[in-house]
Image (cartoon, rainbow, N blue to C red):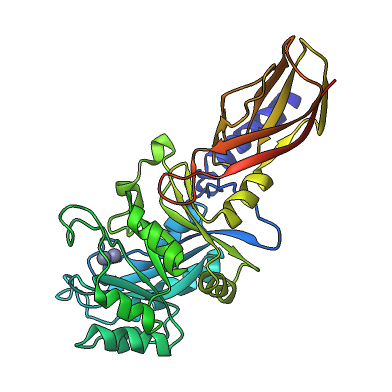
Length: 377
Ligand SMILES: [Zn+2]
Ligand SMILES: [Zn+2]
């Protein structure tokens, strides 16, 4: 009797676990990047296309992809001036957002209404997001399109300034038209990263003109056709430091310039945000180390985030040696070895490292001071 019961139970379990309700397809891959003091860290992609311009997916698919990839907010930004599917799908610039928005509500993904104003260089392509009526952006003069967006409270950013389709050498150039945008409050940010393309010029201009750092996929095909998820490749994204997870808070943060761009394992932005991100990610197993001459200690450093940190030592003191290069791998604990020789002098030692995969300006990396007191007796 017992055996029969067990048999029935195990066949029931077999049915339950092989039924579609337990299918493994719909699993969201969370991205672990900590909040920073005062703000939530939201993972966002503000540039993508659907069949409503030259993209190859229906708008709702963009929301499912965002959910699967661990994002918090997206903007669908179909081209206004380029409508290659218009024979099959009528031009209605508001429609993609109308279709995607309810799926976003259902999956807790913020779906922002946007459009890509698509003109020849200069000024090139610009995204206007948080618009109310995308149809009003269809104008002859690009100035009028951007002004119509601004009246609606849009956040406007310059897309892929170094795109080879408009700059053959892949080098971004600033034209009088961009000064016009700046003077008239018609530009709030620049894509420092578009897909796989990083622009050092865009990074410099963001710093020079106090514009918001943007990093987006500009995805046209299904996202898995453009990124290698099997090798855990990460899609381009903008980290937004928002007061809460809401559309209004994302908008406030973008206008305030509180973003960092995530490009594979590199974080691009201002020190004001990169350093708190590092500090929130990394913990140490001691806050005080005391060493005599000819002693050593292995300081354990735990990185709880999904982004590695590549540290290069900035410490040079006679008689003390500190690990030169340490990579703190994601969700792992690494070791910084501190050892003293015969020649060590008594006193306090500071542990300073340059973080090579944090980029504050082209070729520049911030220095972190590890808050562990090291005393040599
Ligand atoms: Zn474009
Ligand atoms: Zn685009």
